[in-house]
Length: 241
Ligand SMILES: [Cu+2]
Image 1 (cartoon, rainbow, N blue to C red):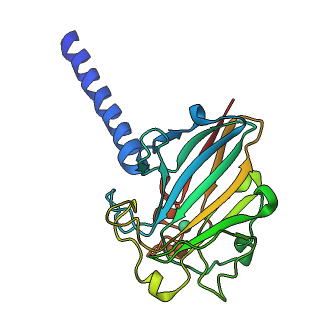
Image 2: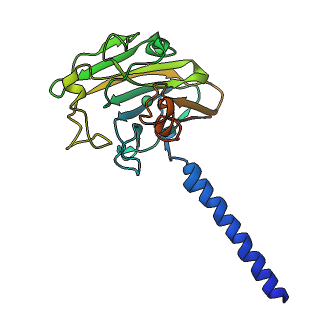
Image 3: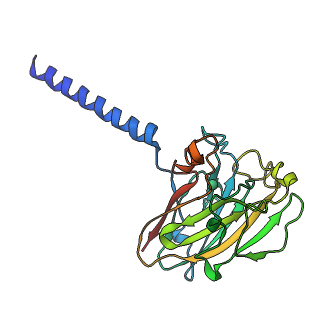
């Protein structure tokens, strides 16, 4: 074989390997979700982060998976991601719009609020018509009541927040059907508004967060699918200096 032919063969073989690696990374492992950058929006040692939970992900090719969304602080749209960036040593005021229905927790410990300011979360219930007054709650009994849909936990910071759910059967049968749940179609569906605050550590880094309700319906032990795929029930909080 001539030298140019050998070089060409080598280049083609090399590109084939590169294509194979890219295919594995992006199609098999999955692309990393985008990061919502809240850094420029922090003021006076505080930053407000808004998220949403939903019973389905109709904006992706996994329409029947439960998921979180995070509001883009610039466009105000709810993007399909679970990655967000916030400053170190800052109080994060989180609002979670909880549009999914209730599921019993496998461990009652996950029904206890931990690691938030005052060890409470403030919950408002929207039944489809009216929004209740805010209640400061510390514990949920998900087996006695239809009370919790998902959890927001950052194990590295000892943070655990059960996300309150709509409580009645009628509300749970009337949940938002396309997600993200926004006006005009779905913003009026039964949901909760969960608010809590916590302080980010002084050490920059990547802090994993996840839901501890095994909500991957149809997967072994409920822990596959949305529970094990970044961008649905787990993500990263990037703490930056
Ligand atoms: Cu979940």
